[in-house]
Length: 384
Image 1 (spheres, rainbow, N blue to C red):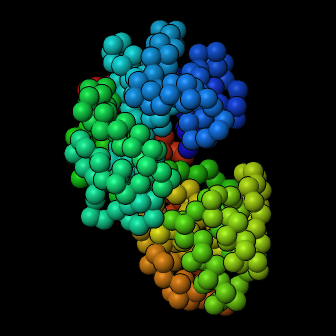
Image 2 (image 1 turned 30 degrees about the vertical axis):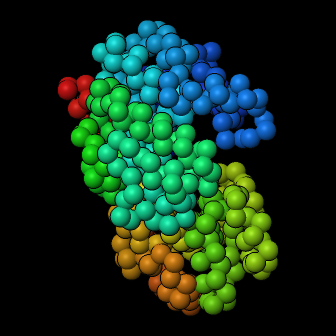
């Protein structure tokens, strides 16, 4: 989404500078000489004790990133700074550089980090955190429940970092406006005690050719328990329908062992994903966690491919049940199987849902609409 925004802003005549860490997978940038060092904090055994200690300290404060960002601001002199995911690597330290120069800051929220040290609102990394265990300024329950990778150390570090930033109120003193891709996430932020204005700017996808369709259903995304891939595979067995799985993650080996009939593609590039979408009877997003605004729902809709998705989080804001897609209760194998069977046997239904989904994307989730709302947020930030 960030790269799309850069392209759409530049196409509309805006100048955009980039700031990031020096990750080995980065795209090229004329500003790369000012990027901050990258640390793979979550990879035990790849760093010495001293290096890991430095990486952990950067989660709380990263003076090197702040100074490099200050240099970029002085060179580029932006009207507004648009942040995305800055925690854990760049840290909120870079916000200070913008505040000192009087540059308004807009931050897009992609996950639940501001209210959840584990980012995904899953207690213990498995069960939906409802009622919320954490809140206010102390996030101790995330330590007790080991919400980050099941690790006491990682959970303690993340909880301490989240609590530290809440106590310091660095976001409140620096971020002018939040941008949320869904009303659901905006509500979560308000419930979490955040008073910074939050503008809802839905994610968007560019138009793609109309799909030809096929006989398989597709799941494209991370293979982890909260994504509900096992629910889909059980439902597909009941519906006697072939599933193609594109992606990788911690559940991959177990899923391959339990469901040898599925077609596992592993990690593939964007063009290959688009080809699989175009060749699918339907795409399924069977998440059991609070999804925000998944592109895995929008991308098939843009191609006119029917989507079956869990009625959870921000997903119901994207598609309407039995109008532009099918919603099922998360974790309900039988209802998901029934939805797949309907689509498998009813060509007219597939055509109707696919056409309605595509029209919804073209009118409500288009790059033009996204850019219009984003520029409104920028204008509001600059006038504050």
